[in-house]
Image (cartoon, rainbow, N blue to C red; front, side, top):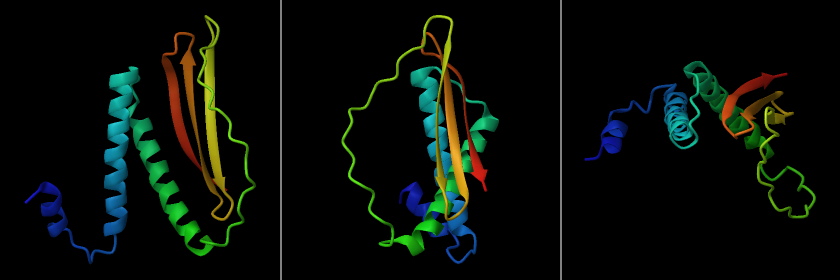
Length: 136
C-alpha cells in the first residue's frame, strides 16, 4: 500500500473541514515545490512569511474562483476573438537599474483579486518579489 492510499484511508471524509484542509495541504506542497525550484534554478530565496502569504492568497483565490464559477457556468459571454500575439521575452534593464514586473486579477462577482510583482536587477537577479490578495 502506498503512502497516498494509506493517508486517504485514514482521513475522516465526514469531517466538515476536510476539503479546506486538503486544499491547504495541496497548495502548500505546490508552493514549497515552486519555492524550492526558484531557489535551485533561479537563485532566489523567498522569505518564509512571504511564502505563507502567497499560499494563503492562492488558497483564497482558488476558493473564490470555485464559488464564483458555480452559478456562472455557461452564462458567461464569450470574449471576442483576439489576434494571437507572439510572447515577448523578458529583457534586462540597463546597467545600474532595476526592473519591476507586475500582474493582477480581479473577480467582480466576489470583489476579490490578487496582485504579484517581481523586481530584478540589471543582471537579471531577483531583488524582491511578492503577492497579495485584495478584497473589495
